[in-house]
Image (cartoon, rainbow, N blue to C red; front, side):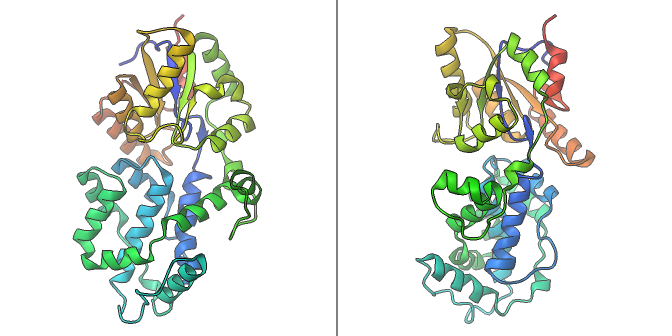
Length: 339
């Protein structure tokens, strides 16, 4: 248990600094919906995924990357969907090298499918995924056991780059997508969900902490999104760019400790310390595992949980991992400052 904070505080962004229920989590849900309702053409009249479902995957572990979480959900539904199809009619061998060919192939898949059958027990699947260790590859193992050969067929209608493109269009919106990728969107032209992110940690909290502690960021976001968000919420003054380590800076993501250690390396090089202890402030199982592997103090925030039930599940996971400190949100860190 942490009674006072170490001198170095390294932060996650999502669910710690800003809330992502209306941005990243919404992008996951809407990307899944778009893939089946619009691209496959089922014209669904109900949501396939709720925010609580995204948290189930997070709790399964190794889903720090929201693109991979989205891939996993879509693959789960595809494997279930294939099981109800006449394989001679779905165009498995249609070419899919171009964007247009992929759209035709997906629409062919949806032509004869009864949309009322689009239901899946994600809770039981995520429990099995968690037992195997979490992540996209373990998801495929679980689906192989559950759906057998249907998984191989489902993979022929599984286009990660297209999924990522839809996700980024939804999250960034037309203007920021063009700014980042230097091209126009294919589907979305409205402002992106990134603009709906709200601050969790107060500016005055960061101001007090920055006067006493050395601050850095280690996040699964890409740099463009991190810097936009910090600037939009006037927090960029607390986190110099050189001390922000993103998914583009290391080859192995959390729950590996590489991002955290790289951030610490940069900070120690700048501030000339060697034996300083650091804490990592995160909101997920992967964050706490990464902190433990890096031999940092681990601080788990419950602020990403959508309701009391999810909060207690997350607290239970933090306790199981022997998290050093569990807090409701990062503003509580002020209670642990040295007098």
